[in-house]
Length: 552
Image (cartoon, rainbow, N blue to C red; front, top):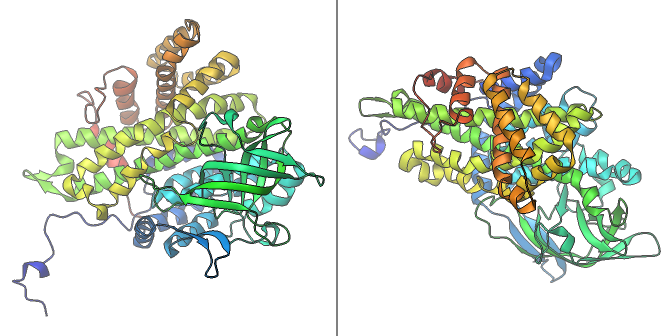
């Protein structure tokens, strides 16, 4: 029996317990409120299907697997024991555990083929609830989800590959795609010389007599190289074109796609991101020659949605960790959560998190009616402005949440350093901040239906402050001058438009204290730019209670 006088045998006092045993769906009031507001008659059914996702995501088992996968990084294995080229990557078992669960929960292509209602909305909510246990493993699921609509440019390829991409079975390993129970897809667009400027790509696609192509060149940043197939861009005789590249060919041989190295990234450590060389890689054309960007843009749009959802997930988990700590840690004569300064910080973080969740789920809801022109227009303008704003806000949010834990938050065991290192990533992938802000500008200048859809969405709230905000934005758009002048204000426009949509959603679907605080701090210009500067007179205690993690 341990000696009770031994200080190492006694449980430390005033230390917050580990946040486990909660449900990241039913215990997230903002998430469930948004689902109820958006799913209509299907809400109860959708939320019931999400409860097991949240239960497992909030468990000690999931937390441990997430920590292990983050710490035990993938290992590149270029050759086998005999020196034969294999170009494989080995992952920790926890990586496979997370993907098995995530695919099983329908986070890949299942919504595109499901007959159940509101499956894109359901997947979006599940992605927020699940992915923050360890963000890196979300990448292959995102790309698989996003590949399905792009494949529709070729009916034969879509018919062949969509069932595997929509499967809820995780079937790891390099084998011929049509013989697998489930498939994962990736994307290879950028090259050394161009980055986001993909029209400068130099990879060459040479047509062959059988209608296929052979690709020679490279890709500078391709994540998840163990996925079964990739959508890539290359220069065909008719211009930049999209192609489907499998890892394994129909005869069972390996496609000559060589991994040069794995990227040594700031965060996202569990996910293998690679540089590739194509040495006469076998590829099948997707869409017309010269229509590469137009073909792959559907995939880019869907991955941008997941950037918003993934950032919302990081905000939600970091917020939950911060509130949990403040509820269990005492200082200066009382619990941290009851201190006015801390209440201001936590409530401000909660507003940002709820607004991000609401916006991400609203854009997912727009996918449920793909033939509705207004919803298509809202999605077209909403995705780049949400990607710009939500992903930009995430590093500040996670950093502030980490600080709530003090020195404990700076230590790996807390899980916050993993979230912080991840937090800038979604603002970089699928177009950095400027790329997305300029994409918003492109919609404003070329697609007036996008402006109409945005205005209609904001003004549904029927709030004078939002009407004034719309007027301000529309005047700025009308006054846009030459290209340089327009680009100069593109970031302001994207940010302001995103905040006004968020405010409208919170007015319509969140409690009064949440909506009023968001309007006062974000719309009326009284926010000082750092968290914890909400104006006086707001019910911060109620906002914090609403955001606290709850067992389920």
